[in-house]
Amino acid sequence: MAKSRLNPNLSAPKVLIGISVFLVLIGGMVIDPLTSFICFMLAGILVFIAALYRTRRLRYIAFVLLIIVIALAVSKVPEGSRHFKVYKERSQSNPVR
Image (cartoon, rainbow, N blue to C red):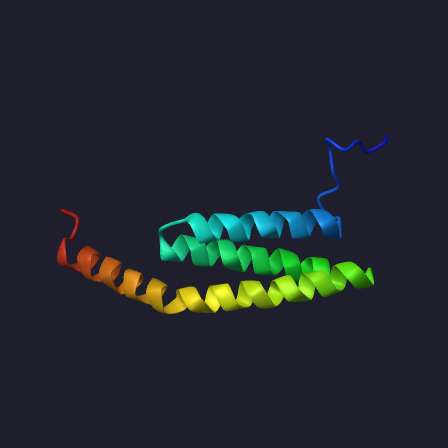
């Protein structure tokens, strides 16, 4: 069965890089810091998998994108920890009855 452009191979490095760029864009637009951190981490995992393939040019692109994703994820850690601390305090002060 032949693959068409409308049905791409999801394990191809170009597709993995495209999905990770999409996740980085979503993570940058989301207001919740924990959700954006999760999007950045998923993008990092996909880029790392794409970097393992043997194509040299795509490997370089994947490593550059991986560095960008790591920097974005690290920048969300302090904001996410503050958000989680506030969430934990609210959940402990208002127990479910």
